[in-house]
Amino acid sequence: MKDFLAISDYTPAEIQDLLDLAVKLKEEYFKKGNQPLFKGRVLGMIFQKPSLRTRVSFDMAMRHCGGDALYLSPNEIGLGKRESIADVARVLSGYVQALMARVFEHEHVLELAKWSSIPVVNGLSDYNHPCQGMADALTIIEKFGRSAKGLNISYVGDGNNVTVSLMHISALLGWNVTVGTPEGYDMNPKAVEIAQKIAKQTGSTLTFVRDPHAAVQGAHVIYTDTWTSMGQEEETAKREKIFPPYQVNAKLVAEADKDVIVMHCLPAHRNHELTDEVADGPHSVIFPQAHNRLHAQKAILARLFGVA
Ligand code: CP
Ligand code: NVA
Image (cartoon, rainbow, N blue to C red):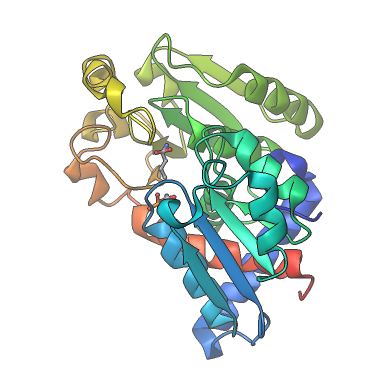
């Protein structure tokens, strides 16, 4: 595959293989540092939205493997405004060896990939967040084991871009997904259709409920994300009224499996979608999860560069 744009572009075997590579690169990094796999390569990082984890973890993934990264801010690039996406893609293809792009509209990252002769990685769009999905799965596997089938993954809150990638990777790996969202904040129906097709092949189940308590029964993972994603800021006040019943707090966590892990892609809005008590409590894996972005993305880049 030339690009990394969506988890659902891959087969279960391909995703498992990428995760195995991430585990290997992580072990190697902590034992002796990574090999200079990306020596002489530069990743261009296009950001239309803010970022902490995506920016730093991609930059460090390149540096750890002997390469380099270049941050391109919204003002510099003016993607689709100062210059057409097709022209930006073709120009950058002659300067750097791969692109990572965080965009508002998913179409824009698809357009970049269409016109680039180099690999393009989706660093979050309004539709999905596949690099996050990879780090999430790596974190779940580290806790429950590589061959753990039949895990129950519960997502509570806004059915958003992060939920799409979590649902797709969970379905690919044979995990059961339950999503609890308020009316009007359901998941993208196209993404659900794709997940249903995957689930048919892998034997995973997909369940959609309104009641957050019903959503977490038997959960091995409880996952939540911000109630207001980047680009939806004008809806903040309205969302803050609707979502409080979906807060992940100690009471909700107590309803899940006793060994449940609590996940959040971060940034967290503490004491809104996730309480401090839970975020900093014994079930939380939010920081190892954030750190796994680094290792998952090394694996993605290594495959796209064809060096591992
Ligand atoms: N989870 C995540 O993508 O974080 P950033 O927005 O800080 O990159
Ligand atoms: N759903 C969030 C994820 C941030 C990493 C957003 O799109 O803002």
